[in-house]
Length: 201
Image (tube, rainbow, N blue to C red):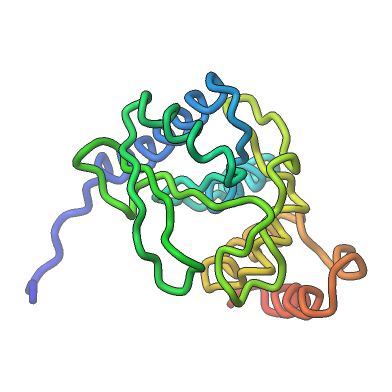
C-alpha cells in the first residue's frame, strides 16, 4: 500500500479528456463517411446536453457509447476498423450476451473503447424498456446526438448508479423536471420522482 500520494498530473487529466473527445469524433466521422446510422448515447450524450445549459456542470467520461441498429454492425465494423479501431466481442456482466466494443488501436483497453449498444433491444434483461431507435437523434455538428427524451428514457430504464448520476446532472441544469412525469410509465415515473426528490444523492 502506498504511504504517500503521488502529485496530481493535471496534464494527464487534460489529455485523458481530450483523448475521449478525439475518439468520439473519429468514430463519428468514420460512421458518417460510411453512411452508417448511429447516435451518441451515454456519458458523452449527457455531457453534450448539459453543456448547452451550463458548461461548468459537465461531467467527464472515459468511454464512448454508440447506438447502432444490429443489422448495421458489419458496415460499422468495416468503417471503424478502417479508422484504426479494433473490433472485439467481450463478456459483460449483467448484459444479454457479449458486448461489441472497438478498441482504440491494438493496445487499446476495453474501458477506454467505443462501446456498441443496439437500438430497439434491451442491453440487460432487467431494463424496463428497450433502447431507443437510432432515428431518435439530431445533428449536433460533430456527431449524431440522441434526443433528450430518448436519452432520459434510456437512463431511467437502465437506472444503474451511473445512470442516476447522469439523470441528476440533467436535472441540475433544468433539462429534466416534474413536467416529464405524466408522459412516463408508472415504473419510470417513480424512478424520476426519486431522482427529483433527492438531487444531491
